[in-house]
Image (cartoon, rainbow, N blue to C red; front, side, top):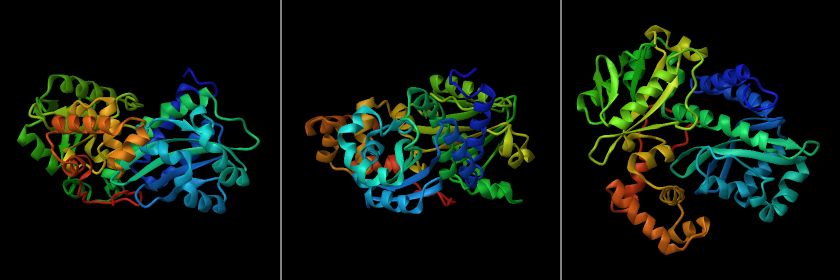
Amino acid sequence: MTGFEGISAAELSDLIGAIYDCSLDPQRWVATSRRIAECCDSGAGGICVHDLRHRQNDQLFVFGYAPEFLRTLAARYADSPMAVADIVANVGDVSALSMERFQPHDSRFHGEVLQPYGIRDLMWFPALRTGGRAASLHVSRGDAAAHYQPRDLGLFGLLAPHVCRALAISDALDIRVLKSELLERTLDGLAAGVFLAARDRRIVYMNTSAERQVRAGRSIRLVNDRLAAIDPAAHHALDLAIEACGHAGAVIDAQNPSIGLPDGRGGGTVATLLPVADGQRSGVLAPFAASVAIFIQYPAHVPLMPGEAFARLHGLTGSELRVLMALSQGLGGVQTADMLGVGEPTVRTHLQRIYAKTGTSKQGDLLRLLHCSTPPTRLPLRLAD
């Protein structure tokens, strides 16, 4: 049992595995998005990419919508409740248009954009942020269906961290080229450190970037051929995560999608783990007999630094993180204050505390620390500016 009516533990595990297979082959998102929608009794959905600076909206891997609706949504997206939620909500936080907090602002958007195309309710969550752009996964119901209920929101929220993780891995790594015979050469060309671990947690492969990270010894090292973090708390978290990912049918911990690895000097790296013992992933990495892939990156090299991991790495509070994420979308201090419902002096206070914790002194340096990247490969889903 899963605690969610209509889906078994085996079905849920299989769906989560399919989500991670999309990180290796993005074209699988069409079928996987359909499966996610079906679990939530929804007839349409897909991945929406928003350009928050230019107020543009593009749909990827969508199904079930009339082309006219997608064009209307793109033109009116800035007027929708989703636009605000996608800026201030944490990555992975689920929202639905039928929620009470959206009702005072929803009547015109619903009447002019949704109702003409027979859409009763939309449910979505921010899934990826980088630079001035963001992506979200959404599903919707038609007029004949009921509004989304707590069961639907709960199941969608359970799947959200896995979708966010799969998109983050795809965004950092053009994994499709791993199907070629040049697998090892491709891995060596990546800015991210890639560690492949066997079931016993022994590292069976490191790319060039990973070898440099180990030699530097700032946040990680090898102990008896096993990956270890310098920070004791981070070491414990990493050890548990590798062990959890190393068996067949493993899935990522939904509550801790990324692991901050401090170096004890105000910096560090972030680890992203992917189980590879099942499905399409096992075939791609079969030559290495690996069961876990571990991606480790420095913040200055990360195409997408998940807000939660960045906050853990630098000790930011929830309020400080919300201010940072709003500023990262191109909003000014006054706009950020209005968006978050606080005073501008409060925003300035939070920003000064963020500077102190991250070792920066200017907003430009802070945002570069969060967003700057020069990834060596790209996907069609790539959201870089």
